[in-house]
Length: 306
Image (tube, rainbow, N blue to C red):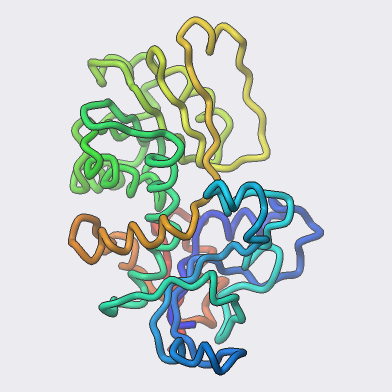
């Protein structure tokens, strides 16, 4: 392991969000490293390669994997949840979960690309199907939502950034947001500020109240994509969806190809990661990194294995 990002899913794990039966486990799923050993001499050419790590493994012949949805299914195994993860010096992974990086990139950049970029890319392209000229509303401007901003702009959307933090709204503007709105002004104010209907709303906050907020600001025939995870519940009625022909969609992580695609965009200069890699800590400060995240002081801390 060379680098591993610390994100909201790690805090969710720590609080028992994936189930108490998953604990104890070594966290870490947003990772980059280089191959030091392989199990078969036929794969020796992998040794020394810089790789991004796809944290999910499962049966390649499952109905979901065959359909390109290797991120779901009853038999998947998640590094850092179901088995020990990348807050460690070494991990053992199937070669099928490794994404070679060439030319080489900074390890912290590769690490954050595997989740902080790949997750919103998956939500906007494979689930939300954002089209050029559509209005995309991004609710929550943290480590996932901030990148939904720049990916949405790359896809040709008009992007509305919705958040409470002035620094995060300023970051959203730097990343290309066309409209900035404070969420604490309420759904009506957001709709007025947009000046147009939201065709896609991506909800990146782990808060059921924000799930309801996303439904409230969506326009006719809009797609509401939930990315932020919460164990809490929100209320809705059939008329919320029928009268507007609204679609409510869940987006779970990403697939291996999403990592390939976002790394290509980083290599091409179309996506940036400096806002995600500004805070780093050595591997043995993982607990402090989780505290940094919980305090809201950082979008991400990247653990560096020196």
